[in-house]
Image 1 (cartoon, rainbow, N blue to C red):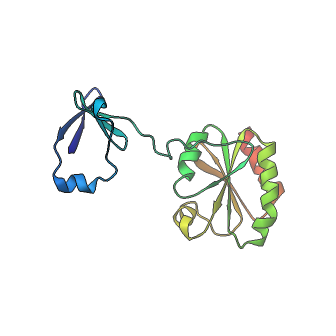
Image 2 (image 1 turned 135 degrees about the vertical axis):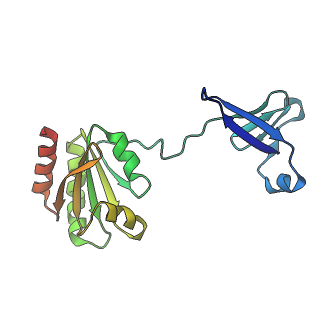
Image 3 (image 1 turned 120 degrees about the horizontal axis):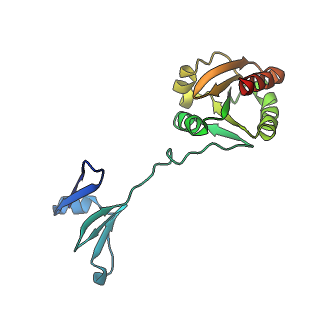
Length: 178
């Protein structure tokens, strides 16, 4: 059964169906039949009611449900960084860009966690600058680790390179007061 979904100018969904070929039915093994008296067949998030046609339930992606957390450090990656930063607005975001093998990164990590517990009006994030996150690290202009980026309104407003706790605190305080 093929499903065609169209959106009307008012924003409502309309659907139409055609019957499947045996090849399509074999290709959709997740299709399961409910008890015969229900008159419904379901596939994934779609349900087919013999009397009313298809109904499609809206599905939210995991990225739409990403929310910033205060009071702790949240690990981010290429996919989650910008959605979390945008969801954090108007709060300040502090990003710790580190690597697993960096000695100074390991030394500053517990102090960074303490800052996240102290500044409950600031969102603290960590980005492992490994191969998986190389594109984001390049986009953010990483040159050395650790590097701390302070963002306000989804824009980098301050940067601290090196494991310099006093400079990180000063950057946070300065950004908060501006």
